[in-house]
Image (cartoon, rainbow, N blue to C red; front, top):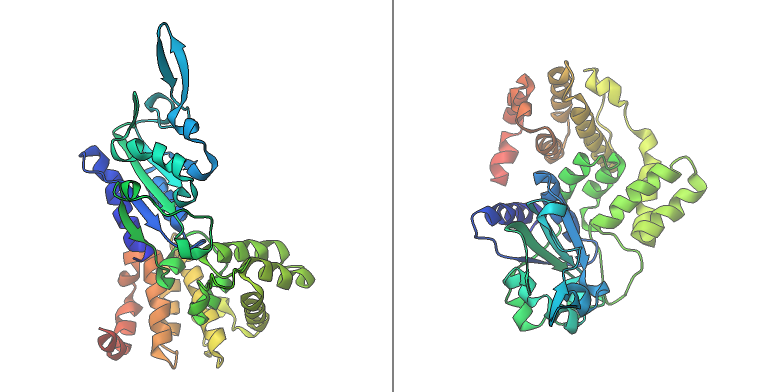
Length: 348
């Protein structure tokens, strides 16, 4: 299931805690694919805390608590990491990460917590959702087979990569537009993981974010940049990204495009992807300005010039995801839609 759909599912599961319909959710997926990121986005969307418990790092007693004597009986000290209304608030997300890496003795201690929302005398506050995530056994991570009693306490979803969803996330989080353009040009490299080769660095949504950070740190040091990119995304993908970036000095002047000047479309396909991605970034920057409609209109005018109409469709689709319904109010949008209607009808 694509990330945008899973976000909607987790969002509704969180809201369902108030109606008493919440079901704990287990997310499955390869390393670096964005499982933790989606759960974090749900917490940010509702402005609630997230308690991240790595079961792989715990002993059974860490979850159950420490026994102590109270008169002639034994009580259990509740672990402070578990959700507490006074300490953490009435609403939040309890995230059991790396659950498939936890030894069976630890996962068994979590059975009652996940299904009954209790551990002895402790009870998870009603407004807290329970989400978990882990790798599959074929992903070459440290994993145990999930016991049937534990698996039956969750609803299960498997995450798939989706470039459109990642591009939207990337624009929202100010990921370098050169990386967005590169992955539009080479979409198969968004996630390229072969567990049989057991790579140390490989292309994934997580490692492309690392590549973004590498560009910010080493962009002015070309002798180090290639090695830094390869360290993030693997040798082959790092070389490709570096070559792609080196070719961007032939890009047309973006300021001329948004000013409405006559600017030719680059002949090279990789430069067309780069220009389209950069223009989406300019549209996002212009959204809150007084002349946003004028700038977006000039971008739409330019989008009509692509010889391959699908390139213009990609540009406008990404712009719509990034800036929303405001795009439709720009006069040039209807002109652009009419110009590419044959492509849109074909796609439908």
